Length: 134
Image 1 (cartoon, rainbow, N blue to C red):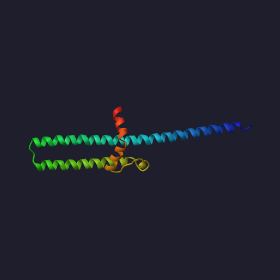
Image 2 (tube, rainbow, N blue to C red; image 1 turned 90 degrees about the vertical axis):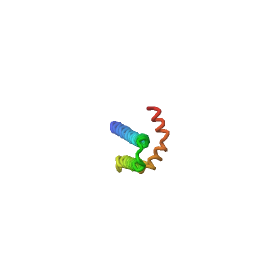
Image 3 (tube, rainbow, N blue to C red; image 1 turned 120 degrees about the horizontal axis):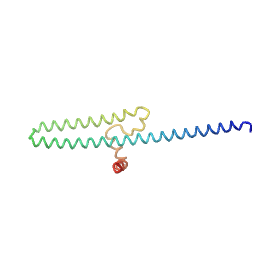
Image 4 (cartoon, rainbow, N blue to C red; image 1 turned 45 degrees about the horizontal axis):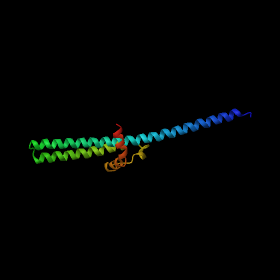
């Protein structure tokens, strides 16, 4: 019993290290969950922006038809719109992927627009619950 203080010291160190380890693991898990939630919400916001952009296109086409613009101008507008939309889609997805860097690359489950929409579809229930709570 002469070295009881050593036992208490070791017991304290073991408890402290165990606590810190579980805190670190819990914080890591929550950080990854937060990262995944932000990806899904970001994709939802991007989809809503494209939806609004389509409404603006339809409104512009209606105005062009009312003003009797030529078919060439209408077709040019539609082509430009499609090019801008596809550029926006590819650029936003590439920016999301690039933002995560090498360390979090495994958490990104998509790399193009099609796989991003599949990921959003997989998390559809989460988005619907998020909208209802907002």
